[in-house]
Length: 239
Length: 237
Image (cartoon, rainbow over all chains, first blue to last red; front, side, top):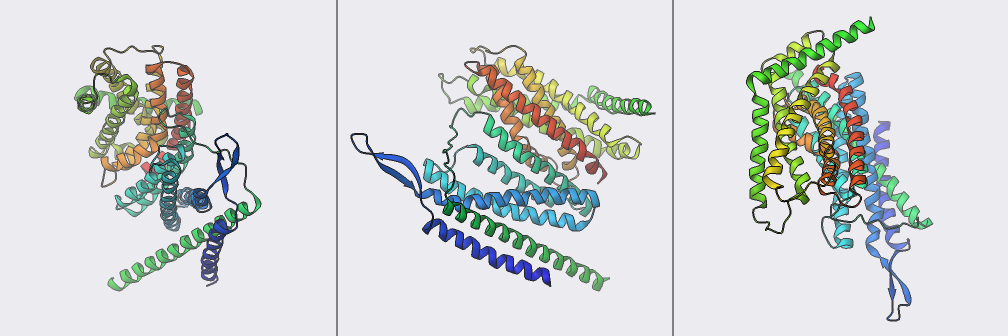
């Protein structure tokens, strides 16, 4: 019962924190300044505020959460291969489901930002490309699971693929960065670091998001456990 | 004792590899199907490029086209190589016999590597004959074979692991494609970059080639190690 209270409070707290972070991002953080605005004589009058940067406070926490949760897919995969206990397979599966949710959110917010900043919906830019590949890997994980009937085999294969995919994701990130693409330049804005209130908004959003991830993971886990128990009761009644 | 065990492993390795090669020499099934598939891909390329005009130089996308052909032919070959094992009950027999699992992995992976290299060696001249008649080749002669080898090692190593999984699923070749393409993405990107640098030349092409080679070597090392370590669980399940 204690655990349920913890999960519930994490969910509520996560919701409150992400909302607070969201509000702070819009009302309490100074805007990031973009290109200089000059008059005809070339004198700098000021800098154009970049409103699109506000998505950073939502996008980056979601992206970081997706990586962290994906780590648990691989972690529980290793645990499963070591112990062969079914609970670790279920945990890995649920972790991948949560990863899929975060990955889709990251993709959606990333594409919105790309459209606004670069004028195009899609650019084959390293971070976007890596994310696209990661989405495909997470989808592939479920395709693999769904095409295996035998429970133990499904668990083993999924664990192996989860581990391999988790190793592949950072390699993909590194290689897309290092291999120069001749078509689109890599656009990197030189960041001057975050000011105090920006950092606060970001961190509050990040912790809120991690709490939500934790709460969703545990809620889904409970659903799985209840489902298993139901199946066991059904089998007992029929037998 | 350790030396004896190593000698035994080597003998087992040779036996499995020998079996695959003898089977291939008798049926010629893998090379024929993969080679023909590569040839058919060339026909598709002709259709794809048919409206690109005379000013278009196919050399600019030659590396990409080549690796595209290799991706599809290798998926075909990998699937076949493991379907044989499974359908004829050979994999089960191998698992029953006292052969170390890593030996099975290496023997199958090397077998797949050899077939892929043969198909690459056959495809390259045909591709050059069909598409690169008027252009010149800029790099050193050994650059392309080196890039092909580095790419083929990664494809057959990880591919053998994935194909062993996919033949035991309902989807078989479809599942292989879904697992294979996103996992191979970084390797293919580096391979195309290195091959392209060799074909096109120009400023900084040597550096681009070695960067691509380094990336491929890193991918091969990490992913082969992971596949090698995880293969035991796959064949055991």
